[in-house]
Length: 386
Length: 247
Image (cartoon, rainbow over all chains, first blue to last red; front, top):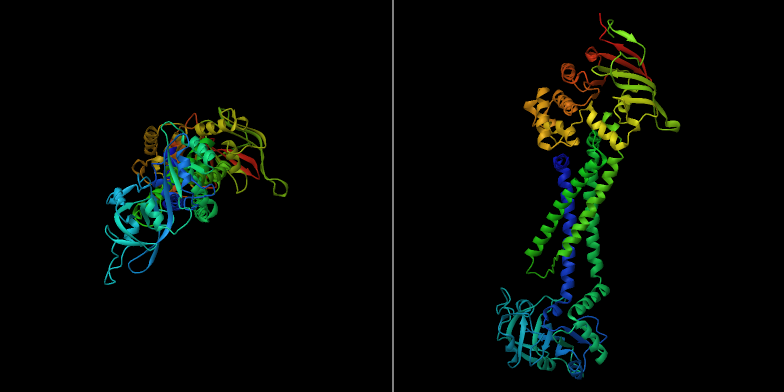
């Protein structure tokens, strides 16, 4: 009877397409909004993602997320190095500094100061130049997106596209001269500000004078050492907070989830997608069943048992659900792909596919359950009524 | 009514093997002030090999009676057996299965599934009885040939005339070789000539020794095709006329 069920479904083109469109729209909205939300959340810990070499981030216990800088005394670095199980520990400066552009405008940049000796914490990918070029005088490395956009120079005639910042160009960082020695590629950050890398000692000269300038201590556990246990030991020994990379990502993301309206805004869009999908697809599917009630009655009179009718309706619901979900996810992915070089944050892990698939499944099953109820309660004597 | 017919007492039947035997069947719809007594103690017997027409004014209980006989409705009182089976006492699932195997239906408005071709519509009872699709389609094609519609087997119902649609419905009612065929006003949606041809066809292909045919109709033009006629009024069979006992 499966073929009969499918022919009944696709034979009514208008309703069939209506259901597919409703579910496609629901799936698109749920998938796309969730993917943008996930992308945005991933950006909140973009800097942690890029610093993949260290296992452990050590910081002031009051720090709530990666941009919440509460500087430490430099001596803390040596205390961390002294904890049993720590292979090495290096300082990291992270701060927001103003760069003065050639046209006199100012642009706030995220500045990372890397350990002078090891340059641990550098960008994940160099586009132009080498990380070791940071050892040259006044050297900075600038991220590619920032160099093309916010740090780019206006053309001399004022017309045409901006001229990207290039190796050899000079910036003023907090009234200090800095020379671009490389261009790198980094994970987009939540604030979308240009990212500038330099050495720790140079960053501390760029930064406004403060008593403490050490933002984070990056540490590596000795081989065989459990990083989570080591974090506990570092905390107990130094009184500082120590997190594994993943723990710090979660902490950072949790802050944004808790203290910003982002989840609510995206949550509303996702819920709206779900409601609209339920309303359109559910209603259309129910109407489709109502339109076919006489035929279901005929089948019932001719000997179709309840499980047969149930299977037919479920098959119809699952088919439109699968097609609608597939199209919705496909369109969402296409949008994400086409806008991959824009500011749009878009991340579509398999978990999101499972979530949107489950949402569409719930919509379809709800519609099917209502329809099944109607069909099972149907008096087959309806077939004798004209 | 034809003067050559012989009248018998209500509910009695010629001796033979009974396909349907109803005794004192009562059916009541609703309750309270909306209570409607549709059948008030119907006695009726239908023999195997005969075509019985159930006639009477609208609201006399004809459709309710065939619904009870076909196991679509349960009577409130009385006894109704189809080939010695009491459908009311059967569990719902077993009754549905029995109906699917034993009873064929022809409806006034054909009730063909509009998105299925003629041959697929005819194959539906076989599919419901667990036949493989390819075999069911082959068998449905053979039955369509018997109702002289082999050349329209791939047509959708909307592409067929009313008479052709009813012939498809007849093929569907026969395809699984049911022992009882129940037809509800099979000619009322058709013009006179087409109605006549359809009933001739139905008589030709459906009436067999081991099978019974019950036709509910208002259409006096087709009365002559019946073996017996049971006239109903106000929920009772008030008269049974045997047209075979003609001069």
